[in-house]
Image 1 (cartoon, rainbow, N blue to C red):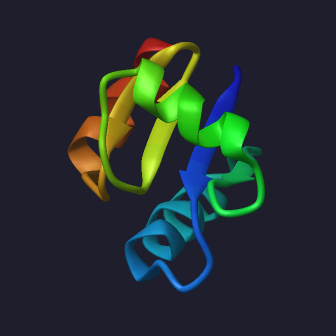
Image 2 (image 1 turned 180 degrees about the vertical axis):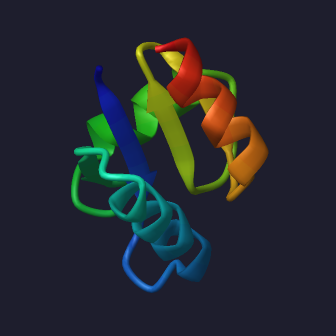
Length: 76
């Protein structure tokens, strides 16, 4: 399972997503939008503005939505 969390330093909602995934025992990659312009382009290509964006096996959601995160994780 591939999990990517697009975030930025100081984003409290991003931290909620990362902590949630850690609590559930999922490994994930963090992509800091401020450190790499390519990451911003990747998020824009998904049609999403804002952070956090969590991508699980190519499917993306924005924000911290535990119900939606669980659906993505279960489908993976």
